[in-house]
Image (cartoon, rainbow, N blue to C red):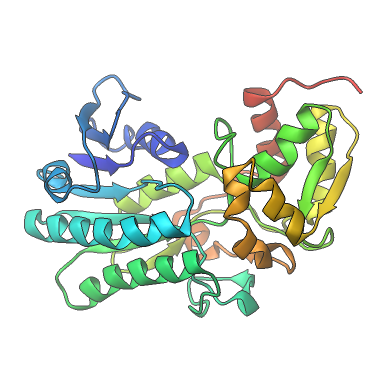
Length: 313
């Protein structure tokens, strides 16, 4: 049995699709789980309740964490450490391997141009400090020989079907598709990597089913040579068949937008990621598994096809 904790999100759903290539025993766990594959086992659970986590993990050979708690530093501080502690305890009790789908918030802001698995850990944000804490909890148990686990890290992600969970969708795809200006945070000339969600899910499934991939950190496959923020807007506008209009959003305006768009409120402390080149290196995974990430232009085309109707100017 391979179990996904937090099965309903953008990554969890794609991961369930990918796992069917490796096993016919998949358990989907969330508050309101929905089948992705015909034979999926559904388990309703509150993952902030210790006993629910134990029940979810019991009988699992591999446990994947793709849960997405509300994008709030306050909520993260309350939820993430307790949840990770409960999952670690359950995995150790039932001898389950753990795969943690992570982000890069814990990395030192001065080393974002060419991030690798060896990039220094030195978070500058509240959310980054929480991510560093929970990742270290897992790494400490691995080092102690108590847990078999791996950490799979993604850059900011984009992909079909995640309109409300992607900054790129909120700031560029949505406004351009509705005839408005895209909202550009940071410098127009800074390059920014994005991980395509189906690629990330496939790679996570591969890692979870590869014995020698455990007990280390992996960057999930992400196309190289990313566009600048201005180029992202231009390519997305071209695919939508609209003009590449945009406005640069200063920090105070991001704060105002946060009154209406929750994800933007929490973006204020993360704006440093957009005022410098943010380039994600996944060569370790690509070389080990001979995997080529989807090119950015193809990713944009897939999103528009799935989620937006191209409009005339």
